[in-house]
Length: 104
Ligand code: HEC
Image (cartoon, rainbow, N blue to C red; front, side, top):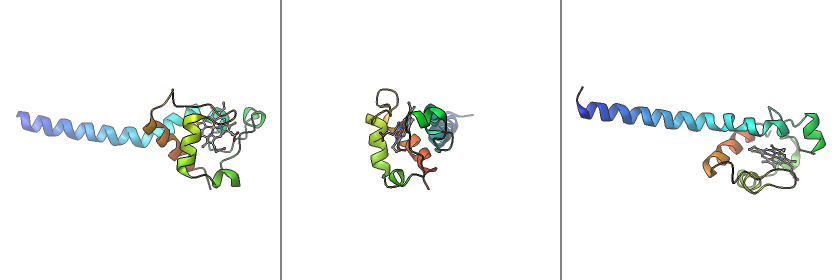
């Protein structure tokens, strides 16, 4: 195999890995949220109830834009922890995108 072919192949792998990481990130990262928000955003665990986590279907949650949710996840709000030290901005966006699939 010549060098050019190898380079093209490697680029293909890097690109495939990049997209895959993005698509799966949100779901994988959400494992850090589900203790409080529930596996599907229902916030129905005893811990969620004790902390008064609103369900993703709550009208007040539905009213939030993606940008507002990103701000809440980044900086925290009330008992909701801030994630700016724990996740990168693209990770926060991915996890909020995933959480928003429960907002109906
Ligand atoms: C320790 C429990 C806990 C964890 C872990 C947690 N949250 Fe929250 N979250 C809360 C609470 C409590 C609120 C309500 C805050 C308020 O309005 O006072 C909240 C609110 C939110 C909101 C505002 C809309 C809504 O549903 O009320 C978003 C968006 C959100 N959380 C996203 C996340 C994401 C994304 C993660 C994981 C990266 C996460 N949370 C992890 C407790 C938690």
